[in-house]
Length: 401
Image 1: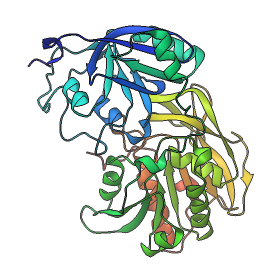
Image 2 (image 1 turned 90 degrees about the vertical axis):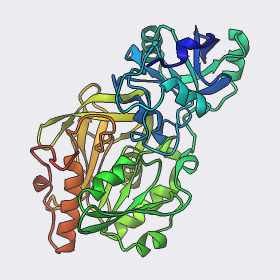
Image 3 (image 1 turned 30 degrees about the vertical axis):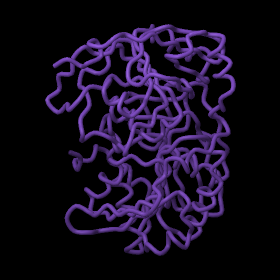
């Protein structure tokens, strides 16, 4: 089944990084120009979920796996209503699509959505450059093939640090995802760039999920009468997200159980009084090792973040709500991968992680976190405390598809 890419004329394309390094290749997807932050993702599969993840808004993704596109594109695996990446960079675009679920090629889908891609470049050299120099601004063009000219345009684009992008990706109005089977709980999910699989995982556990815009007020949130509040993943610099941070402080003041992932972890850190900072090149892919500091268990996780929380790894920090502590770290570099808030008796009040437990795409090692959220909500409903030691699962959840 031909992909279509090798059946049409090859168009030259140029990629230029903000430090002047350039690569020449072949265009795929749409023609034209695009700009963003160059980042690399280490996943060997799941490119459809990656490209439709709103957390990648205004980023040009470099695939480290050399062969991309062999499973084509289907109508079931999108994680949002559109492709969010600013551009896509691959070494070898597959000549055929062979998966039985495929409806069209990756090339066709990028072209139909106006996303510029570049293939046939040395992505290993590009990735090594980004690892050594850090994530940086980049441009891809099929119309301006002069490196100096394209570099001037790259340097005129905004950097990711200081960028407030949540308003670009959040839902315009509230939506409700009904529970599967009997309703057990109601969760208010603040959409900072949520992926579709996240409310699906909660719905599988009997949760009615109210997906709310990032601009929601505390009164709007209270009107849902939630058993718990969830903050999603999302793009941009968490230091700019003052509105969601103040909202979360109101949630903690109200004593409502909280669970956050990715951007929601960074906002939780800010609400607790910690700072955030930009990582050199971030964590992106579906093979990132994370250690649970309480149990010693190691999870392989799906991640996409370029910022992190600055918190002490081995000491609790007193806050007005209880004791805040780091719960998970990345085994590659000791970056904070999770936070938890407990009372003086070590009862869990709120928690967050810096990765994607919905696993779309990715491993299911962290699915138990949704079960932990359920248990914390159940204990609050019953008026019982939730000992943190009781809600760290020893086995992955069996409720996943």
